[in-house]
Length: 162
Ligand code: S3P
Image (tube, rainbow, N blue to C red; front, side, top):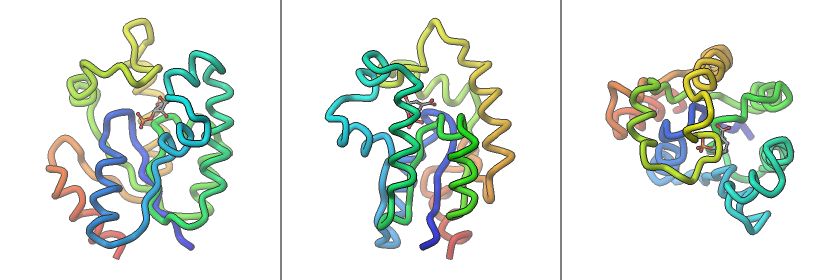
């Protein structure tokens, strides 16, 4: 099976867009963060707090690699933190990057408390800069999340994958 991986920074709309495509094309979809929460029976914030980021990354890789029956995969923004994940996605599917600017992300996540790495005491801009380099490098297809509406992004992606 060829998988379609949605990548992008926190708040770029990966899950929303993957879900809309899933509904439009009747193709099964999975959100890696949701699956981790389901398996761990804990929220991501609690996993980070109790186990730390390094252990969270192990859960993330495990879930990424165990998906077999869901072609549309919404990843967490930090999936690119491990070369192992990047290589796995490259080998197994198509990578779609939902490109969204730092200012757009900042306004979308202004009141978000569900993301442990989006906090006042982290250098969000540095994290963003580091990540977007990787997203750009590994993407097979890029959609502009600042200029296009959700529906336009969905349409562009459907045109590309069909
Ligand atoms: C993370 C992004 C989150 C989640 C976790 C870590 C990251 O997913 O996996 O909080 O390192 O960027 P979203 O991109 O869906 O917010």
